[in-house]
Length: 448
Image 1 (cartoon, rainbow, N blue to C red):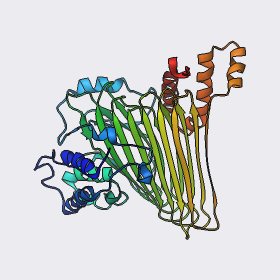
Image 2 (image 1 turned 180 degrees about the horizontal axis):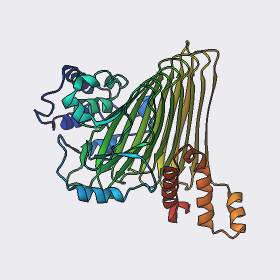
Image 3 (image 1 turned 180 degrees about the vertical axis):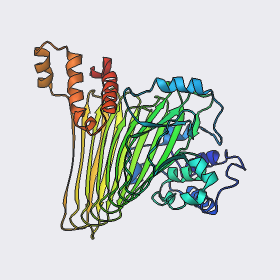
Image 4 (image 1 turned 90 degrees about the horizontal axis):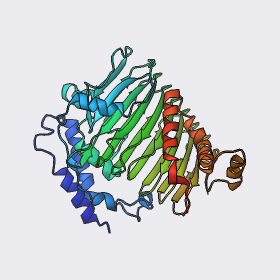
């Protein structure tokens, strides 16, 4: 059973691994942020089933693990790492490329040559050393570390990540792909990448994030991203998590939108033994749009959790949240979607849906879509479905000469199709379909 003492002890053990001189030359604003994060960790409430946000997701197994914090990039052979990256290559994806290995930006393997004028992609670690005051405008402004113990841990130990800045009215000509590779090490690592993605007024960009790893790598990816969109800015954001079945993964995405900005995101979660993806989205000014789509595929000994918190705090904003799950074996998933419409947020338009397909009797889904509405002139809806494959549809395909396994795989791909098609990059869309097809083979369809 998780107690406040056991949780605090686990956190302190990892904080104490920090070398005394790790952050020796940090700016005063970052020292203050870290001090506040340390205080938040000390005072943090226990994350257990009594907390609504963690009601269905236990961190008990996570707290049984001990991870090694890495203060400096580990020595490695670029050729070896490049060969590992090639095994996770997305064919025909024409994009600028950023590589992060075991939590650290790797310039030798990245390719950001010929970026358009007004676009900057840098190592967060590098900017903190060379121009730290430049980051003070955005760092920690959308991610209040006092509200989330793992965000506090990230702030306390932030060491590297990706800083993307797009100037006003600049449009990226190609997507930016960020690949996070976790390697198989002698120690289980605590990976703490932190990103800042800033699009100024009128800027447009497409961003792809892919989380991959060596087959048997064991680690905890405690990943935090802050996204700030200026007026009329547009960001298409695609995220694919396909990590080792030994890995623990937590992504916390904090989004802040100014007037008439547009954010479109698709999240695909296929890997890790324990994974949780959190979106905290806030409309700061009227007329903005936020669309969150996602697909999770969960199998034996896996837990996948999707947590959404969308805040309509100003009028005339639109949000769409649609997630689908395919579960098999003894896989377990949690969908916790929450939309709050404040009293002053008149004319809000919000739709929240979660649909799930259970391929085996032992698979489990806990789905909790929620609407909290305080305004009286809104258009909002929410719903959830849980079901099995339609036996008549399977029979129809089999009557056309298709074997049962293929028929079931076709129906599952059809179920996932509308989510995959929200990815407006054909190469990435095809890669997602291939990974789904690989997972939807063999004993996936055998019912106990």
